[in-house]
Image (tube, rainbow, N blue to C red; front, side, top):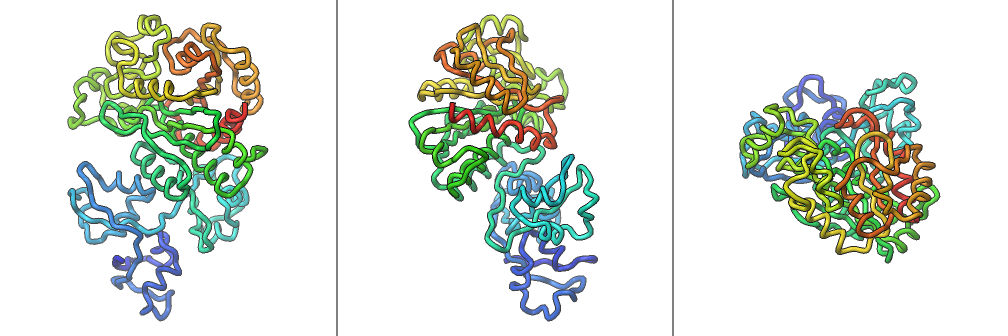
Length: 450
């Protein structure tokens, strides 16, 4: 339990909403309230909390809030004992609000009914969580609170949002494993800076399929795509449901899908948060970035090597046409498979018998499916199916070598694909997530059946 001091303009509903607790729980924790509509400034309320968190070295209020999918304001409100959130120190105990209020950003064509259907709630519940919102005049970009269910409905774990990074992914994987204990979560290795590279197994079947995301740091939205699919697919298995025409329990028995959501965790962190002098490669990275401290479009790993130029499939040709030293992208390194992330992906692939692999990238809405004429004839048929599902443009050959897909096709002569999702300039804004999702979830499911 923690205490909260009522501020000017507060209502019980607003306090519950800000701190992420249900109104009934807040009332139950404060039996002294004779009239819930009559609270006064300075009044001290008891607020139920779900957990305590011990501040770790390097933590900031913002990073902790992001990790637990709450706003900095909510975290600060839950910790009135902290006078200056900018001055937290390792070992300090802070309170995490019990049930974070999720938000949704209105997209083109949205209606309150459609949003309610998507999140498994009702229009009435949405209206109650968003007083003053006119359901007939939703605005693109408007933020809506998603109601906290009082009827046992599960909240979404993976919530697409800007700067969804390594810490958010790892926290969500822990929650997914807790909710769906039948999924297997492991590690294929570590990054240059020592971050684990997680892999998730979905299914028990003898046929093996592999998907990966975020080979490039600036393409972090593909990690969110992989994480959301893990959640949706695991939930359908738990409930014995279909997703569209696909009966998930049947797929689960037939196929084992191995997902590596974030191949390049260091690159994602560099793209989202830049670098400081605590990074052992600070000088190298700053020089590679032309002296700029804006790393937003950074694609490479923490040594300035493009991981998708690291595989022994005409590596020399790719290296000859790219930068000769560390760079934000396209530097192939000093040889194939010199970087720990690429080595981990190669060892992981060799340890399995993958029927098909898909590397998810951004952007261009294209499906690359060939390599030097070594792809099997069925690759074209599978590509045509993916095109029918997504409307993406098929591209057989590209003057590019040394990619993961290239190496897989070369060494196994099996279907391999690079799918470029979305359109625009990397990093793609999170507002593109749901349009991307609607055009690619069918590919993710069909890839398990072909």
